[in-house]
Length: 217
Image (cartoon, rainbow, N blue to C red; front, top):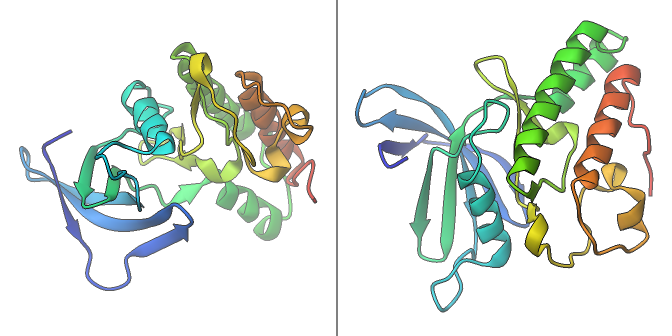
């Protein structure tokens, strides 16, 4: 991962922002082949504590990314540290499953074709199977976290809430509300891979109906 040099694009390069930090687009240059391509920078503010160790969520995300290698999981290209911030570098994917669903819902006025749905779900479930084999739970399955790679694969992304099954810790607000399983809504602090399977099932339902199955507060 050390042969990637990142060059920030001048101007407005920020594509998302949240409580964790920001996501920016930049140009990655391979110092071996000198080829260049767009990359996404996930900048995590305050990721390093006063004793120079990583905060637990950042450590869990980094551990999850470095312990997995699969075509249906977005690869971590490199990691950079600056003062108290950590930056993860990923391939830039401009399309996610949420935008695909919106296109079918509002432009084509129909649901995703069944043969396309099969391909999407195959990629999601194979990525999850690899994740679970490594004893890691994604904990935030939703269409916005499923990216379409340049190679045409759907990849799981955004591991900011990832937990290891053997040492999961109590957390509040785990997962995005419409995709959160009933046991977490009822206050359970016991996490297992069924959390991800519930989310995958809701994504499957959304592909079939082009609407969020459980939407609201």
